[in-house]
Length: 335
Image (cartoon, rainbow, N blue to C red):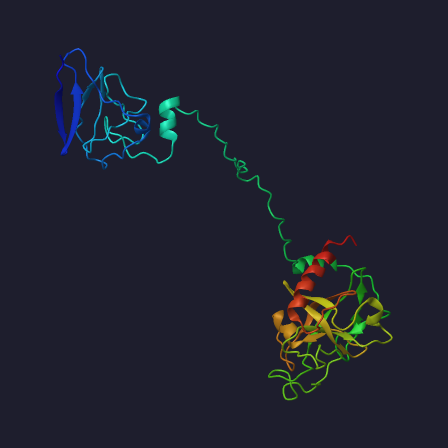
């Protein structure tokens, strides 16, 4: 005849009853159902290690939490019931919070899942070694006075005679030409004609004229004080500038010593005199621009580029940019 003994284990105020047989060699254990085995109870808060009570179960130890639920051992449990800590555990034998998906239950019945092959991340090309990257083309160096003077060191006359520098002087200045430009070497007189201003007016210049041979885009005369321009002889028996691709607004480079200034053709002068430029042109070259006492008696080279034109004629920045480009082409030309 058998008798039932009641084993009461008090864990956190919960009684767990396990019937046992009278025979010491035979023990009755409580086996959780499959559904209960699949359920993973939430573990205790991190850092709070709880004691476990072992219930005899044919040589195995099944941990029981304080709330009476059984804990599922991880696949890495050591013989004798000890659990090897793994990801999600908070110490030996204590399971951490489980993810709510079914991955844990599948691994409990079928074993660990074979991880899917990882997709390799796209690789970036190795950076080019230092110094091997293509560099932007370097901007050409600005044209110097020496560059231009070397190009016009000789002279092929295109005029039918020579010009005077000033009235009463001998005619010594020819107009020379190449395929790209015409040029002459003379003095510089100050032309203060055009719109009157502080420095150029009837009071400062006894020969002042309020008009210029070429007008700006709004029809008014040019301003000698603001716009660098050169004066060409009016068409006559010596030379007609129109026959050589020169007109109002043509781009000119003016050289004095080591300076270069870009200007436009802005006015015409006497048919037998050459060598004149505006107040602004003289000032840009470091020449005294005073219309009475300024100017220089020699050493100025005027180069006018054929078939060029600044529009609008009064655009000083356009004259400078086009002048620099045309000067570079002129210097680099074969002839």
